Image 1: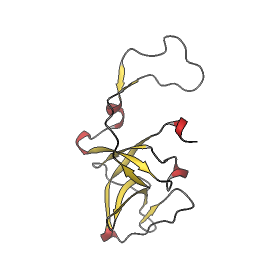
Image 2: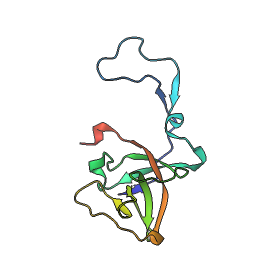
Image 3: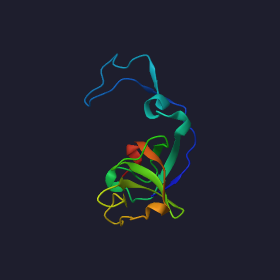
Length: 136
């Protein structure tokens, strides 16, 4: 799973949360929700990437998805991270035990067992944004 840098987005979202079912008249609130307020905790340490490839498809991370990556978040066991292993970038699930592993979420791909000295983590994926129409 690689990545490409997307174009900036400056849109707004409704603050209303729908729980499935039908939309009623007057359900939407007049205030807007800024996508950045929702997705970004550390603005100066956050960037967006466009996912490329299918190594994480079984984990609902698809080719073309927009990834919100926070460099200020400390990577924890189970996080999806942007990593570099010997200069090659990848997006994988970080497993710290029982052995340091970058785990793909697609059975067709093999896990990566990096030497800690060859591994750099460039951030934790905090949100994945995809378009359902384009997934199938």
